[in-house]
Length: 255
Length: 380
Image 1 (cartoon, chains in turn red, cyan):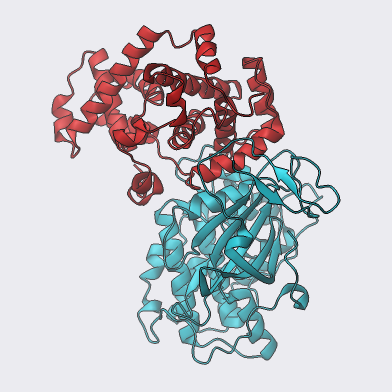
Image 2 (tube, one colour):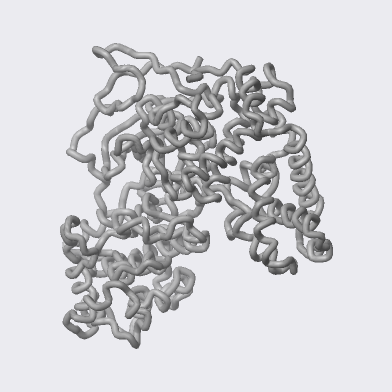
């Protein structure tokens, strides 16, 4: 863990409680049920991931973009801020902050390839960039579990080959809200705990020796289990159903 | 409805409708966000321009809510079509939002103008910078007191130690980026500024050397000049060493002439020669890794000179000041003193001790002059 996480804006300003997160997308609740809204929010995490992959961005930049997107909608709504435009803009902004910069023009073109109904252009992204920056309160540095994973895996005694499974779980965690609730090392440990279940390894003794709040680690693990259950039940990648939900929203400035 | 009326202006590059003949136009934002935004001119009264760079202008201004507080407003605009806000702006915002130290410039506020795609960073106003006060002494044939030199360098090292221990490397330390506060409660306090080239160097997604040329040439370290791909925070220490010597002599230590940027080679012959004339030519003994650097052969074919640092700077070879200086500008970056070690150096423990206020009273230096020497209407 970087020495300065504890003094960062991520730690001091942007670790929230569950009640705060429940307040996300305030106006959208008029048009969608909680399950529908959760489905759509999860969908846009996939959109950012898929676009990031298409642009060949590094995973850390993609994860940063997803965190930006979640923070943006804590106080804003899809009806006022078209979510695909915001998603693309978050990815564009993240590519600059993480210094694996891509072009706004290229972001728009790639997004169009993935989603033929996406009609925003480069200039829309460049304008939206200002609003995203402002809604983030200019807090751009985001910490992630990736860096600490190898160290924890080594000390836990888990097989080095299991890093791929754990890494995949960490990536999946960005489709939940654990990145808004817990410090990255807690998220990392929660993912390792879940991974150890899947791999049928007992690491409870090792975890108990760490100086961390076990309750939080269990909760991260549980949030992920809940997410996998949700994903299985809700067929999150069903495009026609997602379009139906999207069209329930009277989105301003829809193109 | 979050609508703003905005006058047309010559700097506007907005993606919205055309300005028309001097009338107001209505800007309809592409997204409707929760933030209530005040325009920069609603919060600050602009005085005059005090600086400029590739990013745009810097203005002196008054905070309307705190009438006695001067601020510096740094204006950014999109410099290239289709690229939005610059990487420079993002580095400044991203890093300064996280950093907090008495010797690091403080980002007080950020103002946006989404219609015209303008960004303003607001900082505490610093009346002086080392470039200006060194120039004052050089032109007057006078020198800094030992207490002032020691206090300034200690504070620069203190700020850099904070940066380095938070995994940030500055990469553009030079006198004009070392600000010093004028009259007020922070009088004589160093504020390290301009984070446009700064990077977090713990596992960067993009290697540091891919950012191209960094550090202004007179303050650029040997490993950078020789094309190192894996440079470290030691590049900042070299730059501070150069500044240290410059405070003593009031002249730059290694004032090399930069090559025409169109010439493909990055090797700066004149800058390297200026260095070896003072420090002597580096040997494999003193810098074993030098043979792995891309431009090593060019250096090895250059003329040899003896080390004449003590004479050039005019200090006693047996003094603690010389010892510290020579360790800051060691050729081998892995042997160069660190900020932490430097702060513990005996130089700072002997009299006179470093002080929070680096200046003696009265402050002899003139305040910053407006660029073009006259008040200008803010022309946004």
